[in-house]
Amino acid sequence: MCKECGCGLGGGAVKVGGHSHDHGQGQQHHGDPGRAHPSLTLNLNRSLMEKNDRLAERNRGFFRAKKLLVLNVVSAPGSGKTTFIRETVVRLAGQLRVGVIVGDLATDNDAARLRSAGIPVVQITTGTVCHLDADMVSKAAAQLDLDQLDVLVIENVGNLVCPADYDLGEDLRVVLLATTEGEDKPLKYPPLFHSADVVVVTKSDLAAAAGFNREPTLANLKRVSHHAQVFELSARTGDGMPAWLDFLVRRRGASPGS
Amino acid sequence: MAEAVRMAEETARAAGCERVLRLKLRVGTLSGAVPEALRFAWDVVSCDTLAADALLEIETVPAACWCATCQSEFACLDLVNECPQCRGWSGELRRGRELDIATVELE
Image 1 (cartoon, helix red, strand yellow):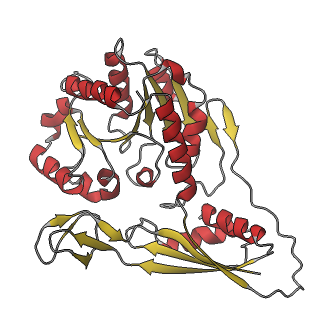
Image 2: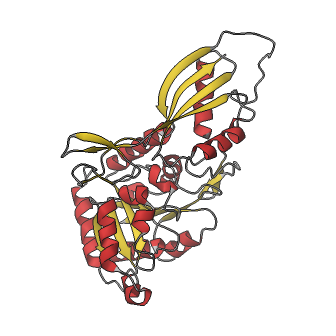
């Protein structure tokens, strides 16, 4: 269950590829209520996120050993994640081999879109869960032939809130912001933009039509995520894509595993 | 919160106890978690577990940011903040992102 919004309370099963994995069920209590025991107070001081954080570190070590550059792509629904990923993979053909893990609440439409472009894809259907976690990614990655890949792209569930707190074991967190969204998005959703290593402003071909205010948007981004590298591009027209692809090729070359 | 129940049950079993009487959470004001939502979730996910009747206590941790220029902490409401003394910007949070189990009381 997500700590942010309580999603997944229904206990729905997460499906990775074609298989389903039930979450653990609570255990029945058979204690004898009549017996009196002295109470015992223990200091735990443990983060509720520690299990995910530990699994994410395990993923990170595994992916490094496989010499993979791993991206966690996050944005609001409709910012253009799937088109951006498809164009990235297609344009990298011959330079870097890329596999994709796609997370969605329901349907495998995004996976089908990528698969039709000849890209190795695993779909995670999260059911009621609004984000991917490290365990789902680890199970999905096992279905890809990682030895045949240089880059693993994880397309997170479209959501600007909950994915911020779930480390998946990625090298780079890539947050998308479309020119059709408001310039104050980074200020409205600071945790996710703050956690970004890279921010990609997508749909630059629609900027004029959408009345995109470029300067205030970049100023807001700078304020919340001053450390993030920013790319402005249109996956549809290809405008701005070379700088992003060049960045990926250089990062893959410089990643510690390679 | 499902993770809080899992950790409480795990701790109870390891200590040979049969019930969780009380669980204290430490929640930062910038953790993104809302105490009312946590309480609501707690009632649902603790049902039919060793923590079913446990009392949930939530300690709120006010967020604090560090200004490297002034070498001082200041209270804040955001992830990136303007220092009230020098007006410089800082994103170095010292507290406020906690979502921890502090203590469990078992029987």
